[in-house]
Length: 324
Image (cartoon, rainbow, N blue to C red; front, top):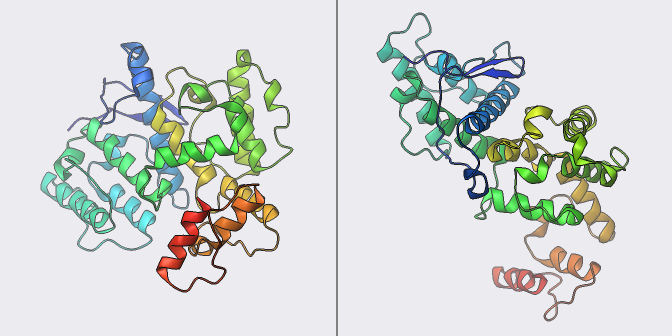
């Protein structure tokens, strides 16, 4: 088995063996991510993913330090799945000095539970985890993040949806990506200010020469006042090799259901349509009436008359089309 591939000690990751990852860097990063730069990109990803796992286990006495070694016998993976799903996995768990076949059975139990819960995994088998396959272990963790952290209940890709929200919330910044746009700390500081006005009122005056300090301050404020866990370090956020998936994972804490960005946007909508009962961004929008009211409040024009009390699916769809 492949040991000592990933080590995470107090947010400092030591990677003693070169590794690859399932999802490649964005096209903009590929040209400069070679040799040591690529290794730095991988280390950031390993560090952030490990921190995310440990954040899920924060209510237990368990901690992951080596992704290959700590997941190989399947017991930690089973516990992690049970925490994420809030239910017990079905089957016998081999805990004490399991043989390799018993490790595979443990891991398979966890993978089966994930598949039953709608987690989409491609070419990831139990033996890959037991053997410490770095590429596929990171791929598995990204599957967990997409399902249980980002969990976008829409057909629109999560990355595209997140960028659309950020561009709307922070129009002054002209955001286009999840790596270089975030290195100097200005975008992150602006996001913190959006979520709670008064925390970073001077974000526009921040200079890129103080990128590390800017990131350190914004991440600290987000953790202290917005309850956003610091799963990424200021050094990694300000690095030119910032991993896109790590940035997306961290930012998803702002945008997730009832997160600080979610609540801030909800409050802005309520202020725009004070006579409407806006409780969330799901059920209260299904009939299209609230969407139309918001469009009008923002100065937009509707294509036709809105049905105030739509009772059929066709009427609801008609309202939504008018609001678009």
